[in-house]
Amino acid sequence: MHEDGAGGQSTPPCEVCATPTVLRSLGPADALTECPACGHLGRDLARCPARHRDLAYGGDPGLDRARLALTHRALVADGPPASVFEIGYGGGALLRRFLDAGARVGGADPDQLGVEVDEEVRRRGRLWAGGIETVPEGWFSAELVAGVHVIEHVPDPVATLRTAASVLAPGGRVVLLTPAADSWGLRRYGSDWWMLEDPTHVRFFTARSLELAARRAGFDRVRVDRLVLDSLSVDVASVARRRGVGGTRGVLSSRGVLAGVAATAPLVLGLRALVPGTRPTLRLTASVG
Image (cartoon, rainbow, N blue to C red):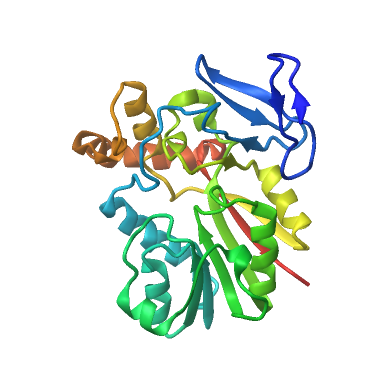
C-alpha cells in the first residue's frame, strides 16, 4: 500500500501497471485512486460512495434495446461469427441474436443482476454460472468473445482478459466495451457522473490502461477506440444527478430524464462526432498471434 502525500491515506498500487496510486478528489465526500502512469482509476465505495443507487441495474429497457441493436451491429460489422462467448451475458439478449443467426453460443455470468435468462439461450447455449475466471480450460472455444460493460465490475480485470484469451479460437478476437475514465464526463461532472451511480463499478479504464491490461494478459494485437453510439444517456443522467434526481432506483427511472435523453440525442451525437474526448465508452479489440 502507498501512503498518499496529499491526504496521508493508504492507496493500493495500480492493478494494471503496479505504479503507486494517489487520491483524486471528486468533491468533499468522494475520491478515487488514480495511477499517475496510466491514468487508471480505482473505486472503493467507502471512499467514493457518490450517492450510488441500491441495485447494480439502473438502466431503462427501451434504452437497453437500442444499445443492444447498436452493439450487435458493431460486432458483426466484419461478418457474423460462427461462435460467440459472452462475458456477463445477463438475460442473454445479445446471445439470442447470435443464436438466431445460427451461431454456437456460450457465456459466463455470476448472476449479479438476478435476471431471468432467455429460454432458448438457456436451452441451446453453453452457460457457465460464475465469473469467466472460473471457466475450465477448453470448456468453450469461440471466434468472438464479447463483454459489454462488464470488465469494470470483475474482481481481477487482467485475469478476466487472460481467460478470455484462452477461450478464443485461432484467429478469433475479444471485443470489450467499458466506461472511459479519460472522457470529459468525469472531469465535467465529478461525483455526479452517471457511471458512478452503479455501486458495482469498481474501476474505470483509460485508453492507456486498457491497452496495458490487454497486453499484460497476453494479447499482442490490441486496438482501443471510442464509440459514438453508446451510452447516449450519460450527460443528461449526470446533469439530473447533479440536480438531485435519482434515489435508490437511479436517475433513469425518471420519465423526465428519459425525455431529456431523447430530446438531446442529436446534439450529443453531433458533439461526439466532432470531439472524440466526449465519447464515454472505450472499445477494446484484441487478438493473439
